[in-house]
Image (tube, rainbow, N blue to C red; front, side, top):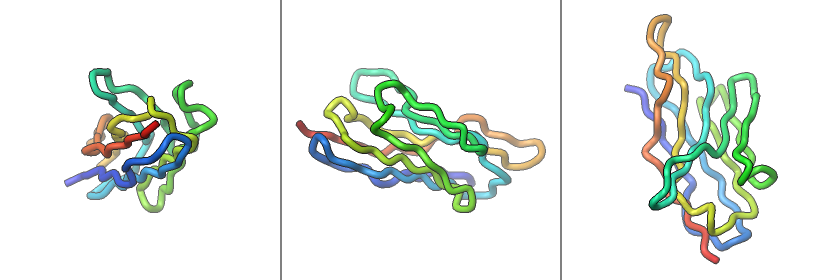
Length: 121
């Protein structure tokens, strides 16, 4: 059974920092693109940042210069360092991964359970 497990969310004051982690476990051959998405109350889920296995990175305009995505392929883990947090960053943050399980099985959209990030003003 394949799982993505996020950690690192919490409550922080505006201007503060948090670091999210997402570890993939199970019988995984390789992990292609990994990323972070977020969903605020009453809003659609939106992309925050993605990183390919070759470290090509994409950020949402709203987080550029404040958030940094990285990954450790040996640990099947992706990180999101969030600095200069704003109240509008408050959301549930979800990890996403494109997983190759075997030569014939690939899960393009695997999701974690989400972790709450709350930024107080």
